[in-house]
Length: 377
Image 1 (tube, helix red, strand yellow):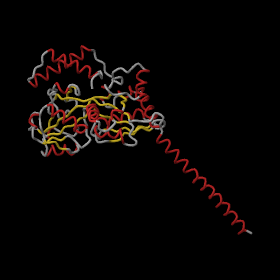
Image 2 (image 1 turned 45 degrees about the horizontal axis):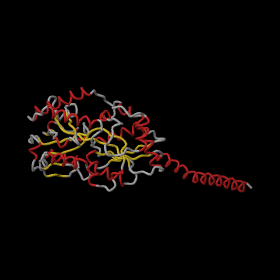
Image 3 (image 1 turned 135 degrees about the vertical axis):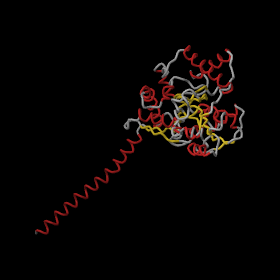
Image 4 (image 1 turned 180 degrees about the vertical axis):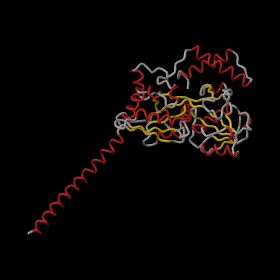
């Protein structure tokens, strides 16, 4: 009798455990499904430059400000540079947006590569990225690089295009190499190459570890008239690179714009709605990106600036029109801008020995101003 009761009890316990196990088993798929839904709710993927570049940091800032983990997820995807990013946002599954140089964008459109690139839309123009040309100490000017090895980055890096165009404009032929930038920096230190070119917003993380003992320095790049439709004057200072640039010896160079592009998405799709949700949050909370701790390049962004000959992503265009545009992060009167620009040109003339007359300065200033306002590419 006692054995019978014990056996019955064991059977009841076993039955209860079996029911609990079955309940847990049936609940597991539901829990997993719920986790999948939460992880993908509002998800957008942004292709950026390498970790040595500016756009990766700016995408990280976007995730920091906009990713609430519940209604919106921002996933930066480390890419190989502007050329590859443009291809990826056009054809790669899952890439919703990409940060691309404006000169790369125009080149791709002219070459129809990738096919259909002109159908892409932009969300906003972002900051400018400076052209850095770091050379060995014995190379005193860009002209001395003729016939020497200069690195322009791996295939897909926007520097490949920008560097080639700048050296072509300067009529300087070099032996181009395609090492990744970290490897190129080591080869530069060892003397295997004469210089490395790199397009990145200042201060670029790649150069943080460079010290004066490495005997390397930035070379100045003159802004020639045939460059002004795509590039604008820029300057590297000791504030940007205290270990490479002297306090009283800033280095003049050029810069190129960047833009946040959107993939071709079906308007009724979840991905389209996710990007539209991102745009609304990005534009509405833009002021938070100007807070200390985020990349200083956000201060150059004017959300209302237009990209000539390209269409803006529908929800972004609607937001701009609905809100009457967006003010530039940093405003400057016309006269203030003209004074700064005139001083820049005067100092450049002293350094290069090539003077410009008043008419040439005015013409170049007008081009610069239109570029800043987004009226020329």
